[in-house]
Image 1 (cartoon, one colour):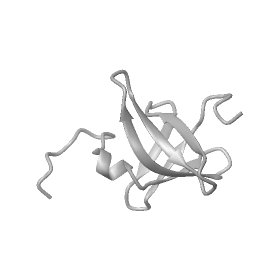
Image 2 (cartoon, rainbow, N blue to C red):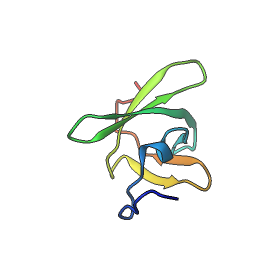
Image 3 (cartoon, rainbow, N blue to C red):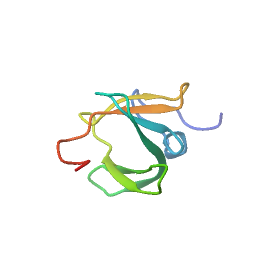
Length: 84
């Protein structure tokens, strides 16, 4: 409640960590955000799946389609080749 308000479509790291991540095209769960890397150019979300595998998702508007804090989920459209 003491946090400074942010512009629309901007989130604090503590709000992103713990979100369940789904592929927007087929609604398959990719995992859960466990960490946010601040790289300078853009943040990168580390998403761990149930088997312990990691997926690095760039925090870009063309990749992150929706963040829904109430439903604890993030919908992403992964660039081609990211899951290969």
